[in-house]
Length: 159
Image (cartoon, rainbow, N blue to C red):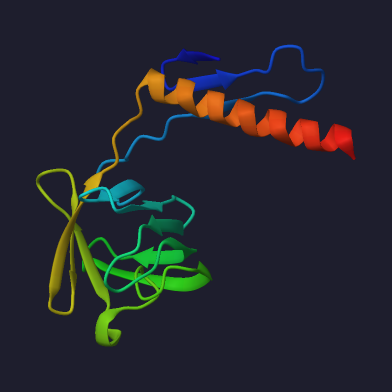
């Protein structure tokens, strides 16, 4: 594994074939909700992608289950209205974009602290930008991916 700027290159020693890859760190574009946002105190996160898709993962809480929600979204930066335009996966109960309170759209705006402020019905919340991982985090990620790859390879060779 090597890191150069915002590019992580992964290789698997002794492997012949397609055993590596390149990943690029995603930076939050200014004036956009694109990027990963964390629900304090680290109970979940939501990532908005530039192509209009999103993924939301969380731990169990009073209104939802541990799980994920995945779909597409539309955000109007002028009005702040954030709407899930389609739900592909929803395993987290009433949490996420798939269940707006009373059918009222979620209003999301960028705040002065670099986070997102959201208003849904009578509730207000704030999300903070997900931290940019340090090189040590990538090392742990690579080690975990290597173990998963090794386990998959062992299973393949037994079949």
